[in-house]
Image (cartoon, rainbow, N blue to C red; front, side, top):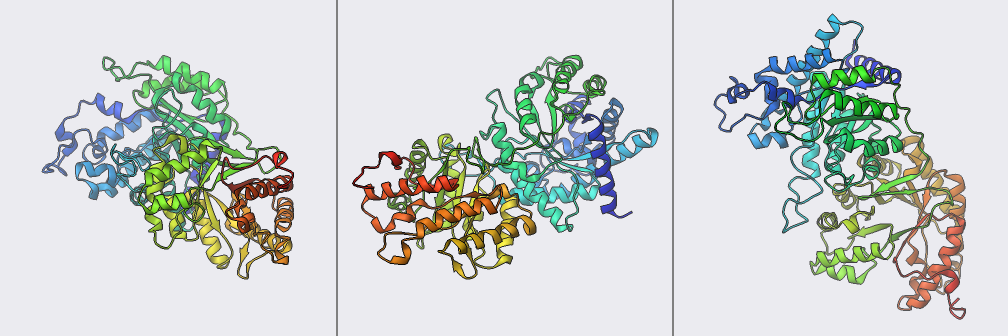
Length: 624
């Protein structure tokens, strides 16, 4: 049987099991290792007897130096009733192993750990042929964060880059799959950008195998009762950021016991359109307890029974402080409870900063304002601050836009004398430290794909790429669209094609309909992630053929909304009034009058100077 045929059959078995009942995951590996009272020599073995760094506590090494211990832990969890055990690879990345000087051992750690867990599964199934057992390859969060600075004096500094994370996760993924895992499980995510790097690495690995996939489960850690990750995201913002992975399941693990985790699992089960996993700690840490945590098996299992009876769960297990005894009691109490039915999603564009932003393509939702002043081509003040190197001052411009009502901020550094990639990286890293700014999504705006990609590597939320178009042909268009999808971004599609920019309604609609067809049918993009910009062109120039530009845009929006279901529309509103630069009263009135009619036609969002829009009915008669 080919590897592909086998992985397909295993995936089908797992899916069938999850449809029938709640699936049971194992408990803590670290807690069980602590019970063994192992010494430094156990971690060294013969392989690392002369290693210059202390190795006790590097639990992943035990797959090589004490495989008997790890095998027995897997076996005990299967005996307790688990369907899935995790490999002993939580720290088996080059980034995490660098602390021990063991980066070169990453492949061996992952391959051998996977083989060890698979042997435990196959040995158990041989004795218990009625059971189906699976192995999940554990990919921990690493010990570094991509969206926060460890240096209080430099909030733009990062100890690890997105590219470095992708490289490390790709190496680990390849080795886990070589070792035979059935599932990939990036878990204990405290920074969503780290998880996005893991997803990017996994997806690129699947592509390298011709699209052959295995199930991917993902799990986040809510660090305290604030209901946020360590990097500041709410549960819904997190889900919007990673939903592009189309995981087998999404869940929450670690940091909290079941009692404190309940509201966040309930929220995730309400919003996620896939299976839900939950594996909490055994309550709070307690150094006087044998396991190091408060809860007995009876307490943990009773709390999780409530989760199951409330319809929150598809997959359940335990994290820190849980043991085979905990898992066995969970299995006994939950085995007859039916699994949760995945949520039916309402079609919408779902973005996020630290907080979620949901935009529907119908007329029910509010008009979305995209703040335009964090753009060197549109704001002289912002351009001056950036050129002077006053990036902190430039961050205050973003804060002002958000305070004035911007739902999204547009960030652009397209200026010939700037290192646009470096500016984008530094600025996005800086605003990540300003919660009032980074709570809203970012629109990464550039005519250079390299600048856009630099931005995509800095943002933990779900952002918008502005823009892609058919100007360079379908091949480049599809390539950029696929990359945007892999980063989990929505895209603005400009109404350009190989012939240029259309000014007539018919030309705008024709290009957008073609782009919609290519993106949805050829690329496989969710239409909710498509935002068409049919190009707002300047009126009042004195050239007669320009007089109809505003009407052409508005009528094009109306037709695009009919012809391209679920897609949104947008435009750079300031373009309409460029002929009146310097006369702000007239410009503001023009913007308000234009938006009044454009929104009625279906315009969903616009790039505007937030706080500088006049209410249409308040325009002075002599101005109108």
